[in-house]
Image (cartoon, rainbow, N blue to C red; front, side, top):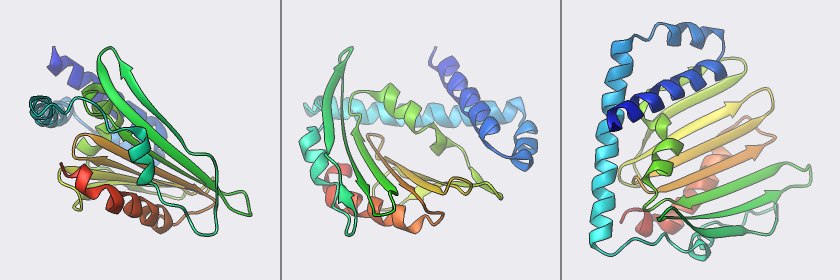
Length: 214
């Protein structure tokens, strides 16, 4: 049953990527064979097994409650020169699964916006898997309208980063899958340079690194 679920996720993600990319990338995706899809499905399956093992280890330690959103909010820094809006956060239990979310937004004088979102999915493995499915694909795409890339992230164990630029609307975005549990997203409007978004994300990660690496 899990195998069919994995293939569904893989095919759905490939379809979404197919729709979002330009003509050049569409032609490449159109050439992906069923064998390649199955191979990528196997990779997803192995990573799901790894995440499940970590979840079971946490349960054995009694770690079944997501980090309180108030703690997650302490990892989100203020940004010099930007006006902070009211931070938000929630601790959630859905069908027995525990997760929490914290977010904070900022605006500058030109009304550009920075949005920072941090999640602890803990026992909600399905949400973690679906939100970070991209880490199983070797994506690297660059054209006049957009840029996308997936790569490993070394500062936290078992972590990946997906970076994206919308060159038309001038929006940059970085997403981090951290240790099969935490998910961090930083979005900046009014820019086509990823460095600022990455710098903010790195500040969040540095503040919470000891927790993220557990």
